[in-house]
Length: 248
Image 1 (cartoon, rainbow, N blue to C red):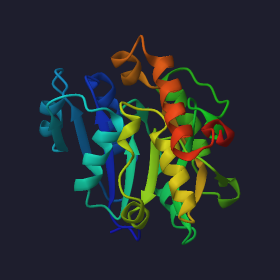
Image 2: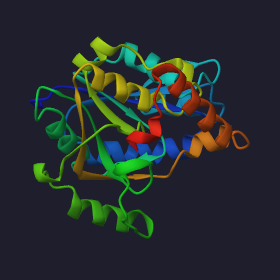
Image 3: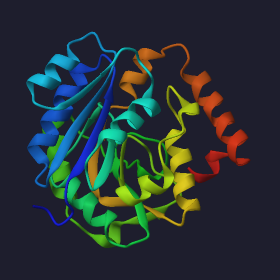
Image 4: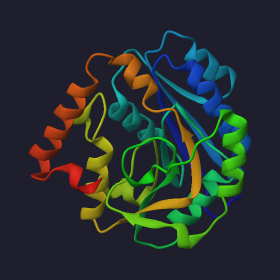
């Protein structure tokens, strides 16, 4: 049993079975510490629920697509882990990803959330690393993912594509704010709330993962991408009186 206990990995998905399968396969291949996988199926019609049950995952099938924050909240409400990890279905993890992030998370009592480096996201977690195909990606990550505290970085925000938090923090803060449904800025909001409670946020700079980049969201909202980003940024400003862009 790991010194950190069980990690609950919560993966919302909507008609993204082609993304979910390699996501789950990579978790199983590269995770050497205890975990559970909770699939939040947002009303998919592509066989997602059947796949999850066949692979002996925890599957919660929702009748409709309730969006990312609401799906995450339902997954968080049933998770049994000592720490909770929100993961996009278009992420492919790599060697030692979870053990490195756990080491970062529990490096100090006041660290509340951590996230990895990646090839695609907004803000400071994106790194300029390129590869051709998964084989090259795994080679890069194998060289990159060696626990190294001097590569950790405190930041004001982390991106929700691979976001791990302590159970204690979730108990204090409660769920994601669903006013940001179907998605965007719910992670900025949660990070801001965590810092108000005195928690620090760290980039686990010794962990590199692959992120395809909002694949399911773009599929669901092809015409409204820019509108939703602007609307939810405005909602954040309305709620807190500050512009979240100052934290990017």
